Structures are given as C-alpha cells and as structure tokens.
Image (cartoon, rainbow, N blue to C red; front, side, top):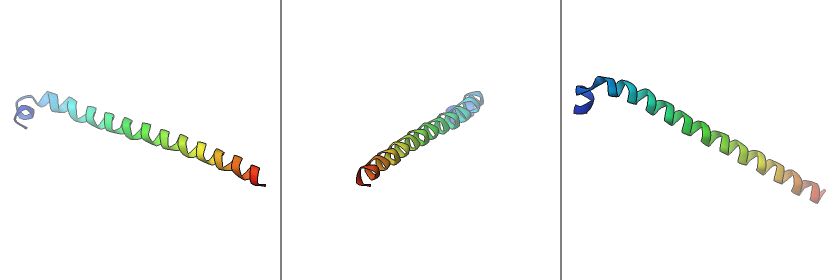
Length: 52
C-alpha cells in the first residue's frame, strides 16, 4: 500500500488493468463453457437419434 501512496499513477493504471484482465478471464471461461455445453447437447442429440 505504501508504494501505491507514493506513486498514485501506478494504481491508476493497475486497477483498470486488473478489472480488464479479470473480465477477459471470465469472458473466456464463459465462452469455453458455452462451447462445451453446445458440444454436450450435440452429443446427446446423436445418442437420442441412435436410440430412436
């Protein structure tokens, strides 16, 4: 915290950067989960067509 009080510019840059990185990480995780879910649904559809 001492470093932040000495150089307010670094925290001014670091905080938005942290938010952007976190947001990007969440977004990528969301996209990956969405893709997996779509693949899973497709797989279930194939299995159902085999059963039918």
